[in-house]
Length: 271
Image 1 (cartoon, rainbow, N blue to C red):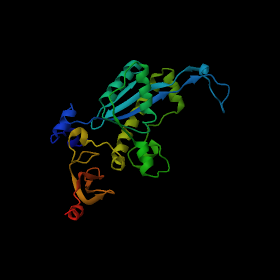
Image 2: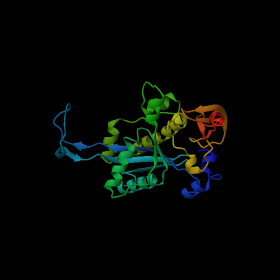
Image 3: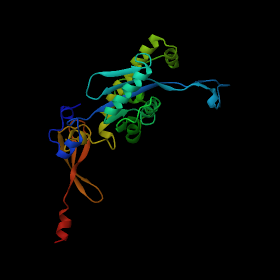
Image 4: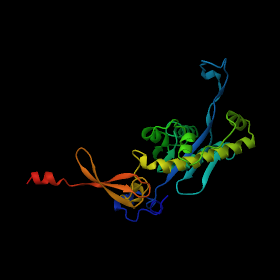
């Protein structure tokens, strides 16, 4: 996180300052979860359909790791290390505090699994947040041979997933094996490390990235990383308006001015 991102809001307008009760701070949460499989009875290995009466134990979130962007500590909670109820409540508290949540395929997976756990725990919806799904961003902007997190992170040179024993790791966790759970913790935290690193690489390419200046008050800074350092790069034109175009000198992303440039030709025609 840039210094401007941490200490933003000094030039905030009164309207934004009134809306942001944290004094110009944006809270970005990097999230990754692990789940346990459904358990049930089956008659075969191929082309099977399972009825509700065959399910003996439903899938649930087994653990999650999360990190506030710009901070060093990675938070980890699991059924084994924390207990399920404490884990779910800790997740709800973080969701409730987050303005933006960064994840990889999290909009379809991680966030929905966590929402189910909140519901089953009798918790109301946490405060609304904006999602940055890096899988969506990668699929939209690039043509990698594989869009899996492990492949993309290695191609970007920011690390790889922690190696493990495959499904046997999940079996060990379901059996309460402490060694398996500690491996799961290492694996889950490792995903946070590379997810955050991929976010920093991909961020200038993310379409519709939330404007962090709407939280910090630095609405003239880079809308993606909040850096004040920029170069003018000509004009950005829509079908109807023209804006100043800038390139951020921190994340290298492009953005336009918030106010359009007056159309002098139209004013001349109206004279």
